[in-house]
Image 1 (cartoon, rainbow, N blue to C red):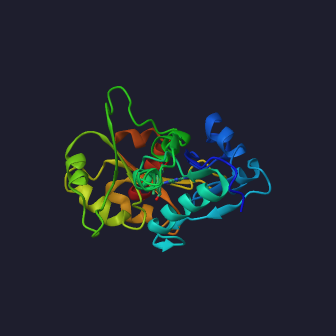
Image 2: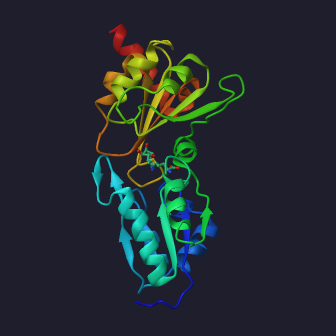
Image 3: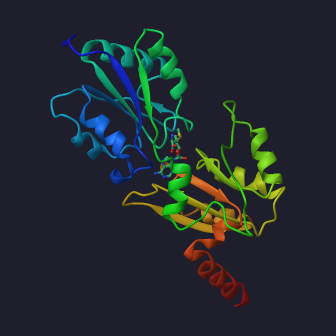
Length: 257
Ligand SMILES: C[S@@+](CC[C@H](N)C(=O)[O-])C[C@H]1O[C@@H](n2cnc3c(N)ncnc32)[C@H](O)[C@@H]1O
């Protein structure tokens, strides 16, 4: 137990995956940390940037496997700040994009401990960009909509329907397992020829991307490992992916044989 350093918590966005996509400010915070609490989807080599002798605690949540419940994470943040000083709470992407950052801030501040937020590069934008898919493009899409497809009870969100009825590019997080149902739902409002991309482990060495049309969602889904995190991009901009027209030509050729 140290009790010497002033308690403070920095919520740091670690970026979408690749270690060099964290911000300089985020990296500086890691280097000055007295303890680190980190999530799943963080490149573990980022932890090597921290002082060697500090506690580094994994508090990740992935696909229903909760290593720590949100309430436990909130309490750990306070305990470590009081006992060690500067706690870096390292979160995937940007802390405020589906990151439950507000709950952590409210809890920590209720103990009189100051919190700073260091923004991160969200996977919602970086992962499609890394695959050459622009979220907006003149004449194709003038807006994009970042969403999760389902509500806590598993039903489709109203936003999924509203976005499907619009011409916005749809960027759907946490939707891999329900990909087929999501594609089916969107098809009710957008044509079957609408391009769709599913990108997994974006910006990491084992990144993968499958592109097709909504009508071919089933065959696209066969190439997907549902245990891996992924982002679904729906809209004409997905056809900007280099392999989209190659695949389309193959399909046309096969159907002509
Ligand atoms: C709980 S949300 C957190 C998002 C994060 N705060 C952000 O701004 O990127 C986790 C979801 O983000 C998406 N995600 C995060 N990193 C990803 C990556 N490297 N490749 C693909 N999807 C990713 C997946 O949809 C995953 O299920």
